[in-house]
Length: 149
Image 1 (tube, rainbow, N blue to C red):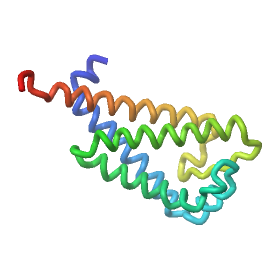
Image 2 (image 1 turned 60 degrees about the vertical axis):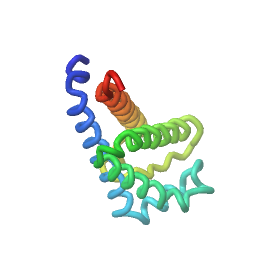
Image 3 (image 1 turned 135 degrees about the vertical axis):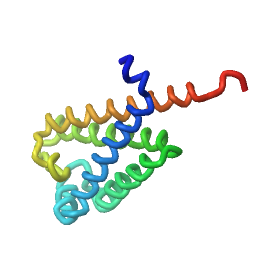
């Protein structure tokens, strides 16, 4: 834990890099096989009524968050957005696992190969990563403030 606080800026950079990698990969895999993504979202018992705009909004949001994470001035809102996005994805998985007899997977790439329980734990790890980024960034901003202003 000491290492993380001593090297806040480096840890924030690593967290942002990992989130960019994840969101660009996820958006890219959805857009590369957009038709499959559209069909899978349409099969979701939870997203049926909003599936049309979800298939466009989610990849665009993932790409927008990725771009924001790349710019230091936009990182804090991007880290909050990453946290919120991953909480929503994780909540969706929990709802599907608890209440749906049919479980379509609208994830892409390697995440498509994971089971739902593994996907849930992966998402929880990313939620913690984004939350850590927010906390480290906010702590760093507090340290950067002058003592007497």
